[in-house]
Amino acid sequence: MQQAAVPQGWHVASWGTWGWIETGLKRVAIGAGLLAFLTSNAANPLVVGGNPELGAVILMGLMVLFTIVPLVLRFRQQEVISMIYAILNFLGHVGLFVALLRVIDSPVLPLVFAGLMVLGELAKQRFLAISGYTENGQTPAQMLMLSRGVMGIYLLLAIFIPTVFSVRGMPQTQTHIIDSLALKKFQRINDVSCFVVEKAACGVNLLQR
Image 1 (tube, one colour):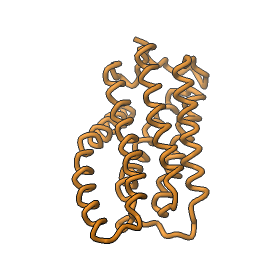
Image 2 (cartoon, helix red, strand yellow):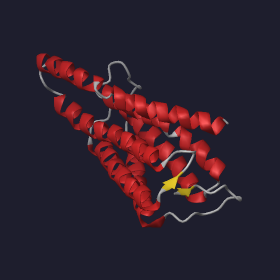
Image 3 (cartoon, helix red, strand yellow):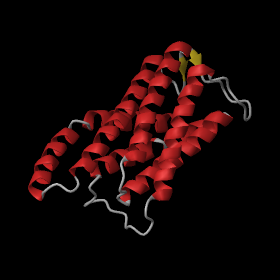
């Protein structure tokens, strides 16, 4: 089992092939998130309650909070590559979150973001399985569970986005029916969301020790 090394000043670690594949996939996803922000209409108000992509907005808000934990962890570890990635990852999530609040017109960039993040998590799981890498006092099994929980959130995001955009323009009676069904499905993600929040809280508690 490969534990994250105690930092001896800022350094560059060896992440292996699958680690770099994960990083590459996620950095393209981050680019999509930032591009969504840059191409969204800054004149649009930030809409929450009446936002047609409310489910996606909630998921992205959750993930924005979750990406704060690695910022602290990577700074403590003083590993250059993962620190740069953590900063970009946070900015990419915030960018897409703001873009969704502005009610964007196309699902392409959010779908690219979510899809590549799912693939990135799959690559991460392969990296964890091969290397046995652990950190923050977690076991390899816990690291894999956390990655799968995060991947589940991105997968839900990828499902919500095209569904919402396909609903736009339908008659109001049909949208009410779809909203009711979507609400029931959305309630099913609570377990996954709570799992991720719990793990994030555990990470914060461990960092504060």
